[in-house]
Length: 381
Image 1: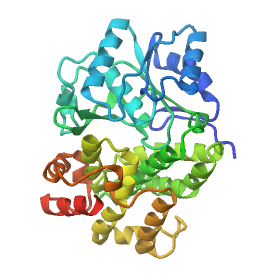
Image 2: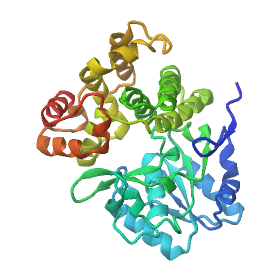
Image 3: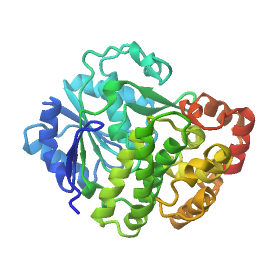
Image 4: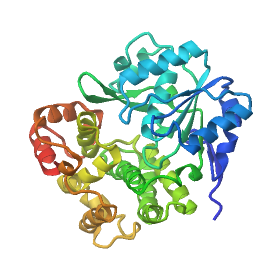
């Protein structure tokens, strides 16, 4: 199968192995002549990043890099990045990496022209309309993991370093102009990152499918995204250089982030405050939370899962799906409790409060409140 394509939905996507070499063309397509490549600290010195900088340099686009990006990027990282962007006279951002590099790169492009604090653009109501749209910098996104799907997202997750809350910052112009999805860039991922990011994509699809809103397009994308993860994540985990599996997982990541326009739910409402306070890996945290959330949501979602588990290759309807999810996690060495990741119940009241204020909370098919969130946190921790 030829896993290469040029797609225009939900944005311009150049998909296929080896397509990182088209980075200069992607910049030209986005109208960028002087790019700043933004990535996280761990990726900055790796060969894939240096290759991207070499490609830019050879095309006369320089090799300027900002890599002061934490695993859960904060407004402090954002302020530093915006200062570098403004001082350097750049006209666009290449957001390069996993969720943290992509999210912060997108926010630097967005906030470089804003005068209000970033928290004024949280994904609440029409707060995004507060933004000065003129001069928001164009973005080229290059994912190096297959999970978050931030490369096709209109929002970024930024951690408030003071309150230790994860905030979703939204604006339509945060959607990258051009995306390069090159599965070769993901071939070197270690197994635990392959699993955690892949299960993040799975969680996006599961929660989008579970959300109570009417959005048939997202519903269909979520089903196919689940199927791709079920079929190809074990292969990518077992053999990191399986480019077919890597490509299909990159597609699943795109699909998860596209599907969750329909909504997210309790999995993310739990994992966002946990990640902000304990700095756990987001996708791994989602995976640990998923079995408990599925059980909690069972009265509202059983019927819809019963209708699709056959297509997913799972016997036993919803109950079979729940059994599968736990076995799937176990196969990737995902712990069954978050205490194994260093999470404690000490800040339980704050975790509950932050979950209730998370935008994901409203997309859960069963209404979340202080009491049931408290029980869910105790169960997953």
